[in-house]
Amino acid sequence: MFEYISGKISELTPTYVVLDCNQIGYFIHISLNTYATLENKDSAKLYVYEAIREDAYTLYGFSEKDERQLFLLLISVSGIGANTARMILSSFSVNELKTVIATDDVNQMKGVKGIGLKTAQRVIIDLKDKVDVSDADLTAKDAVGQTKANKEESVAALVMLGFARPAAVKVVDKILEENPAMQLEKVIKEALKRM
Image (tube, rainbow, N blue to C red; front, side, top):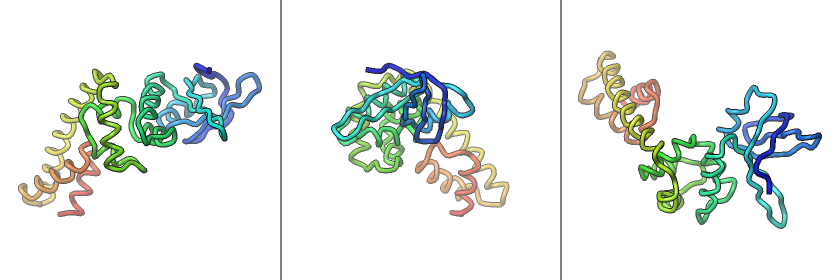
């Protein structure tokens, strides 16, 4: 019924926003990505999805049509409700989620609170053919390049701190295998704990 709601932001939290539109306050559930877009703004235009059930009438809002489209795809997967879909969209940006799906990254998907192995696999299998991965391919290639750069810099830093190169390579490889998107300083800190 609603395509979007535009109005003045009267209340904003990481999980919801209240938009004042012609003196009517709309309580709209949002993801962290949308929250980040709305921060420090006085007004907003959100593309909405209405979830209508017997016991509730709930609005979900998105700063981009792409994010709403991914939300709709996620809730079409068996076992994924609106709140779980919002949790997934709070854990990844639109392009990151497309990359996770495009590259069959079950471990990343499983890292989302409330998502088990079977559900993660189901999301990827069900959505792989439905998600436009042209942007995701670029992101995936960038991520691989970034991971390689992080590995080299982390190993170099550990060697400078006096650790043997083979041991440093082994630990850094293990850390990046577990979390390829980990930032450089976190990789080094984690490696120091494990050395």
